[in-house]
Image 1 (cartoon, rainbow, N blue to C red):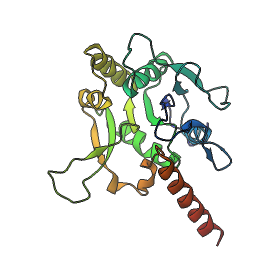
Image 2: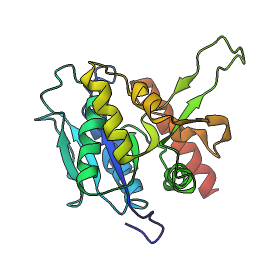
Image 3: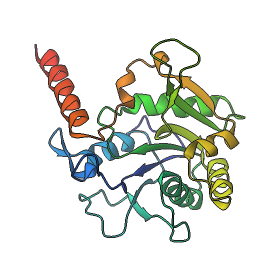
Image 4: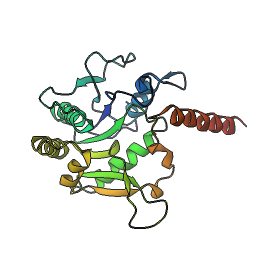
Length: 225
């Protein structure tokens, strides 16, 4: 935790996906000299004064994590699994630790930054009636008939309200995180407003991982020039 942490803020990081498109565990991908999950956790430690909860599958290989990180697992009563179950499990841990706010993310977010997390959470702090912030990419064509692409695993929520909303959705056999955000009345944030929209990039495939590595090398080369 750093001096710039936000009071009563935790995080939920989903690491339990099958990584089927990647072909290797995404949490263990090398990134800047350490596993990608460890990089994500280190970024969040700059912001969070409450636990960072990593949600994984039982028996899943994970890198060594700092002792203050809480490891959680999908509750068995929701057999269909999926990201909403993981978010519910992680938010439950944060409810127990009396966290008010939470960043919701994934283990494969190489360009996540502490400033981005602060931006989201501070908007919740400044607007007491707001239940969540959900970033999205607008249609590239500008055609309103095209679909927007939301990023529920790069969002921020009020913990108690989000945990209750996730429970309601799961009780009705729902599985989409967006249903939770609908119940929260979350505000959608256009990615075009972000200083660096790369914070929303994930590595689901070898190609996406290679592209991220290339971008990072380019950034470091520019910084060294």
